[in-house]
Image (cartoon, rainbow, N blue to C red; front, side):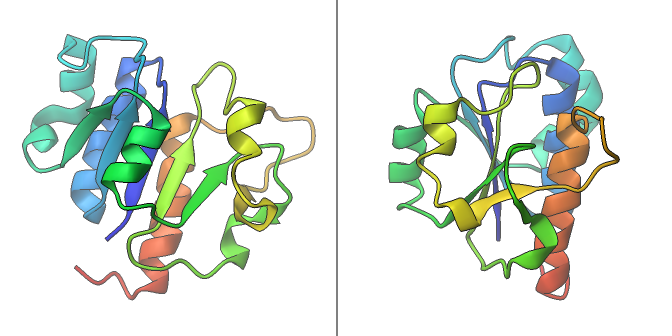
Length: 152
């Protein structure tokens, strides 16, 4: 129903947790290279447990290659620099949620490719930097799924 796209993820346990998230929410996981780890790394497997068998995960050489394969989905960029709250949009089946690398977020040039109204933020207490990547993915994916009645 939805896609999670991780742009150059760096931390294996976060990707493992998101594999588990996607398996449980029926989403597909797209990973944009270069990855900061080997996808078969023990930490990814441990965090994803046996859910890697239940989730569809693909690795792409570029974001453009991923978007082409997904037939140009409507996509949203999650960023602490965005102004639209994630709960203020109406998600559609097939939407893609793009999250950046853990240590630096989405590059400005990638963020600028996304229409401003589809750049989403998750509210946080003032002065805080960001949520953990897998937590941010879960918050927004579950909102999108909730809007569709948790349909399977």
